[in-house]
Image (cartoon, rainbow, N blue to C red; front, side, top):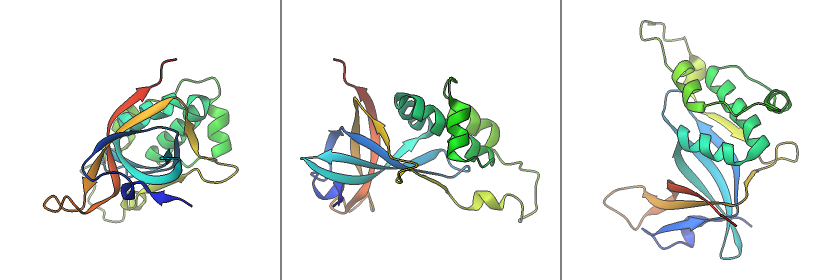
Length: 177
């Protein structure tokens, strides 16, 4: 059974996690941040947490995921541009191609035209996009050899005892063997 990572880590601690698997990517084209839903093994038990990261961090993590990361990178870029694409099509399109630079895709496609006054335009951008990787056809994205340095975030800056299960990414590290 999955347990929240925040329940087993000392509040306020900076720490590392390994054995990482991305299970979902949540983003809004109108925001510069992304939330990753992640599982990890911590103290020999499976835990889940939410990771607040930048698009640049997501781009780095997807590059570390190899060919699968390239396909997901393309899927995220297409979602940012408003062009839906099936996972199989994204994987086929990404074969043999370098990963897309998500920051470029976001800067080119994610900006709104400030001259538009029609409130009904861009209804697609009112809600975040969720890309899940939790099925047999779309399994979690494994990041072998990667360690993440995390820090707690808090629901209220004045109440540091009330940590919840969202962490910020302080660094991405690779194992060198």
